[in-house]
Length: 74
Image (cartoon, rainbow, N blue to C red; front, side):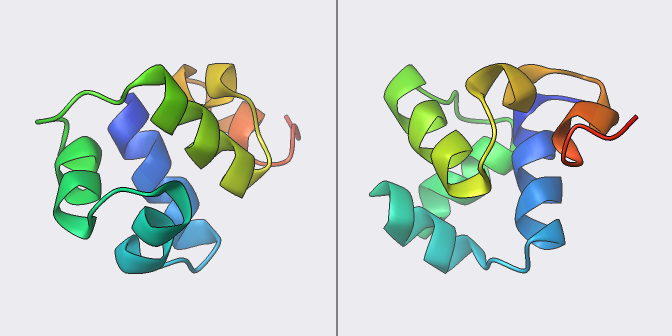
């Protein structure tokens, strides 16, 4: 999974809308949509903020292993 796909999956799992997540990290909803689609690259500062909202690390966001993002449960 790409970082955008991981962000989208986590956002849906946590029942957070694109608008709410975008507001929390200080970006626009269209920019977040582009990140989730993979048409815009996530900057490290934004990645850190997104990870903070989800309670995970940036490494977890870029990791292809879904299990890491599910509260560390394998």
